[in-house]
Amino acid sequence: MVKTQIQIPDELYRRVKRLAEAQEWTLAETLRRGAELLLASRPLPRAADGWTLQPPANTQLRVDPFADPTTPAGLAWREDANLGTAASRLKRRT
Image (cartoon, rainbow, N blue to C red):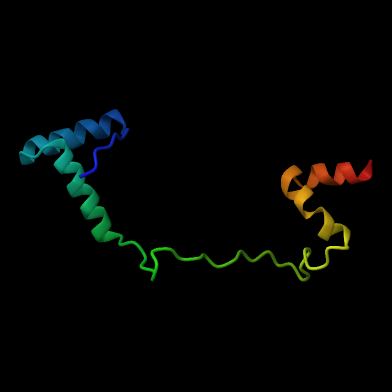
């Protein structure tokens, strides 16, 4: 087993502690049972290797701005990513 620390609101702690006492369980057992119940009701998605790539966001771009590195957009993408587009536009004006 893994030993860990968690933080929960005071009221939730009191309610879980009362449930544990009423069931004659330890607080740890009560929390484990709660976690098992949550996982049973909301199973994790299964993937072959345990990880799934999310689909790309729809940016509605008609042209790939990185396709041609000789264009201003193609040259400045790193700058835009690091400074933010507003800051890089300001820099290009100067």
